[in-house]
Image (cartoon, rainbow, N blue to C red; front, side, top):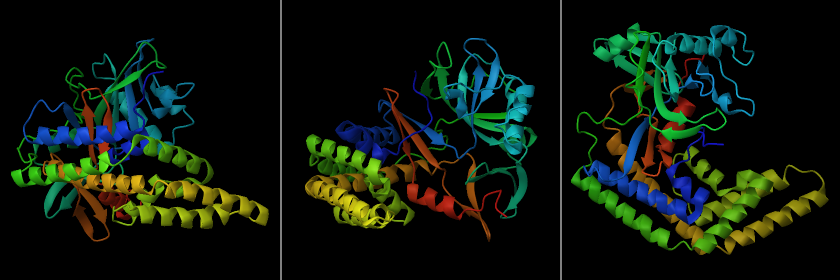
Length: 400
């Protein structure tokens, strides 16, 4: 079965997911992006913008019947689910009232375009866009998820969005002879779809039309220095030790997933500070295991067994102290380097991005970006602390 674009990993997690090769790839991604922002077109890395849309829409011509269809991620179920008519959407029990409306509108509007492929995109709005005043100016706004997007109604883009019935941003193309064999490649050529006043379509390609996205000499120097620190920590990680660490993490995930290193890192992010340390992780592991793994069982005999397993895993982790210290240093410096690139990319926004608060609207950055290398590998570049904070604090359209 071909690769499906259902989940992307964060850049800093690649060393945990893919080992030494993943860590080296993460450094190469950032070096390529640095070169791209310096104006070196030979960097071999492309960039797309992550839009905070929902739901994901798959659409195009069925490879076997040549019928136009729309679908959710269930397109890739063991028994694929997709819709080739309005009646199928209306009779689909798995589509709720709101979701049914969105798929019905998507089918009606997108079927009018010229299709010769299958694309995946993020739905930005259907009948839920609004006209709002922000700082005394008139905007057409839509909030598919956490981030609210706003476009000045006097701009050409604002006028187009205001007249349209739906908006979607395509980012992935699928090819294959059957649904089961579809393979994903990042990027979407929307130039051959044609135009319809009912649909606002964009691709997710990063567009720096102003030149503001380029890094200054000072920023480039800071990034190069941070990448040097990242590389130094990386060279201190031995492949065999990292492999053993990954095996231990697999065992932890099977027996007490909340004690994993990834969960520890996510806990730091939710706390608003990403500074992983060996001591911090060991404390997290010990506390979680005792409270959640041992604490949730009632029989003393079972508690003793769980505690013994935890002590064994703890000792195995402790034997890798130097490697874990280098790993935490590597990931910490990598996140700093990543943030320097995100800051440069964030200077360019074709559409305003806000979050709704109890006191009005607060300007926020886009959700993030996807970096794609020349082999087609892709990772997320997201300011996880800002986006996680926004996700918890923003007032959604459905908030009462």
